[in-house]
Structures are given as structure tokens and as C-alpha cells.
Length: 142
Image (cartoon, rainbow, N blue to C red; front, top):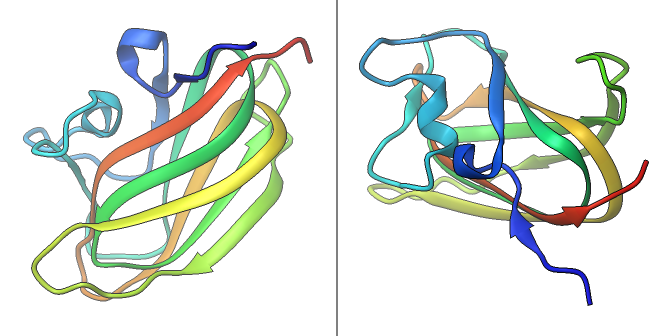
């Protein structure tokens, strides 16, 4: 049986290799620190993107995002060694939940990836925050 891990965690080798905005108090790396009390905050324009790269190719089971004020989210994957050649996996309109984190799970079983690109296409406010991204998967030989 293959062991499932949260491959996005910085402690597991995950890295945020691109983010379209950055605030020194709310850095993109907060997305993958395993905590929900830290977060990445966007500037007031859309779309916003961030890319998480894995230390090794993985076979993804599920992706879970915990965020606030995100309206429309798209996820793309790349199996390339370079951060390029992305293919769309899914896009979803999220429900607005006042005063609490949105938690959305995406079943992306059998997807193999080295990088995932998340595009926040719109929000329920000018600013959105992403608190945590969990990528449950196992090592893959792509």
C-alpha cells in the first residue's frame, strides 16, 4: 500500500514558486506551512495565481484549499520538470461563508503532477486570503 502524504507542505518539500502578489506580513509560503492561522493575502485585483511545486512527481488523490472570500478557483497541473505546460484539471465556484474559512475539496484522483497552478479568477471582496492548501498524494514515477 502506498503511503499518502500532504505533498504541498514545506516540510515535505513543497514550494510556492510563484505568487502574483505578496505582503511581507502575509507571505505566499504561509499557504504551505500546515497552519490555518497564517495566510497569503492578495492585492485587490483579479486574477491572482500561485504555483506550488513538489520535490518529486506525485500522483494526486485530493486537493483541499482553505481560503476566505474566494468566488471562482481554477486548478491546473504540470508534469513537466520546468514550471510550464499546464493543463486544466478543474474549475469551481465556491460558496461564500461569512465569518469563517471556506474549505473546498477537489477529487483529482489519478492526476500526476510536479506543479499545481491555482488561479483565483474572482472573489467576494477586493481582497482574498488563502490559509492552507493540502495535496494528498503519493510518490509517482511519471
